[in-house]
Amino acid sequence: MKNKKLWISVAVFLLLAVIFAFTDWQISQALYNPESGWAHFLEGYGQIPGSLLGFISGSILLRTYRTEKNAKSILGIIGLTLLTAFAGLSLFGDLFGAQTGADLSIVLILGSAIVTLILMQVLLRCFPVETIAQYKNAAKVGLALMFLAGFITVWAVKIPWGRWTYRDILESGNPALFTPWYLPQGYNGHYSFISGHTSLMFMVIGYILFLKKGSKARNIVLAALLLWGFTGAISRIVMGAHFASDTLFGAGQTLLWFWFLKNKFVK
Image 1: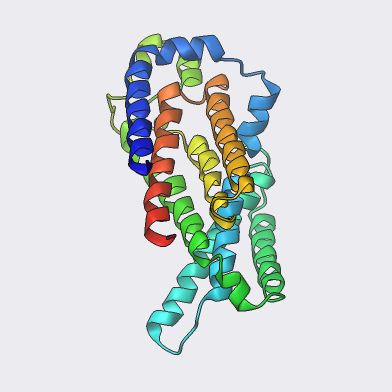
Image 2: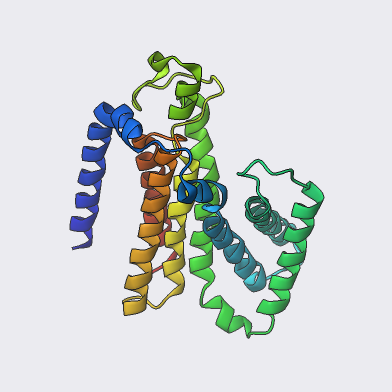
């Protein structure tokens, strides 16, 4: 049954990839509305739940990390702390308006991330480590998902693909700059393909691993999280920040990483 669902999902993904190869421009023409309030809000703050997952996951792993007096253990705790702090920087950067063009104070963002990280450790120490350890594998997925799907894969594709966004093409006044998703242009300072916002907004699926498997609540939450991701994908098209195929591949790679990490860490 699981394999059947997987292959159906792959088939749907491939079908949409083919459709969007011929309809990207028309879809953007139909949905483009840069004055949309809800889409503008998600552009500014839609990535926060995904970054929060990474930050919470890193905090849980720090709480359950067994430190020993050897170089490997020390390097491990340093690396884990840095990854969690980076997730905190992403979280507070968006909270303070990094995506809205607000004037940012790196001192405020860094200070907020460090203070919150410390407070999280104080809070987690109010519970027995055995209780927190129940969520250790889910936390591994959450933290790895943030960096593998939310940053590394996104930018590994964005930088060499060089696809113009719909709104940048309109601003240039030259529709000939549009290219289908399957034709990379090389590095040129444009990063439409793939959608980082969509990747991070679908990353919230990692929250279901903290809920009891097979429970009704987990199924309801899963539906809500997927709806959040789909809404985020549409918002990127509405804002002209991405084409439909950009969001499809952003969501697809996140869900693929989730499937791989879940099978690796969560039995």
